[in-house]
Image (cartoon, rainbow, N blue to C red; front, side):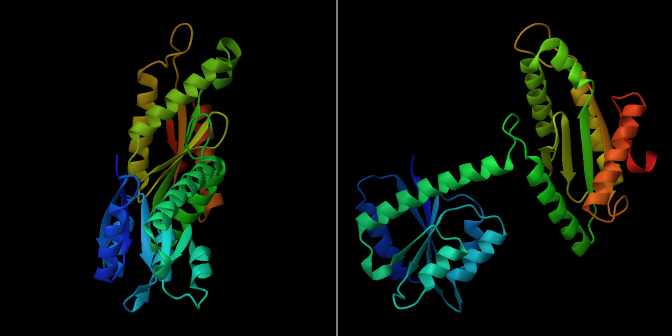
Length: 300
């Protein structure tokens, strides 16, 4: 299967030269696309449809360093190889500092060197992505971990404050989870956690973020959501978990329920810490009220 490579360069001759070099590669694993402007190149890069990007330094009135920085701030994970003819300047170091994984001097590029650089960028990109996943994901469930949840919550709090759009936080806790571990064993407990994770992931919107923030505790950040939307979502999640028992590695399926507490920024908390406290109080109220229920911050 061919890997798509995006060349961002305002020089049509450079595109033709690069395309010719691609045709001489030892393997036919790459397919070249071309963008000749800063704005179009950035837009296409951010689609995530490319395995690697070849980025020229000179792009009309703007340059590739600006594009790298802008792409990185918008979450770009595509490996970037920087192209420059400026051998007497330190743009190569600046490009690496900005986020490029490799750089090539245009006058020195050969097909063999270009193909090797592509392989290097792909391999390094895969390694960095694996390290990011280890740093941000929970090993058992694959959900975001507590550290990444804290980062996202702080980021969304600042974004909400800046643009005036509310967002909701739902905290969910599996009811009587300790009994599952104690009576049916930790493999059963792990199976329950994975199944609850799957049902949560199926139920939330693509823009929402789900994290495992404790042993059996989960958090959902709902972007641009008010209290009514959060209550509706929390009730859907509660019903989805309750409706079907979780299959276990051995024995009969395990009936599972969850309790949920929800809060909305900025109404229920003026900052990230206050919002978590409000949702946590609502979760405590849900448990104190009999479990298997969703409670809003205003109800606790």
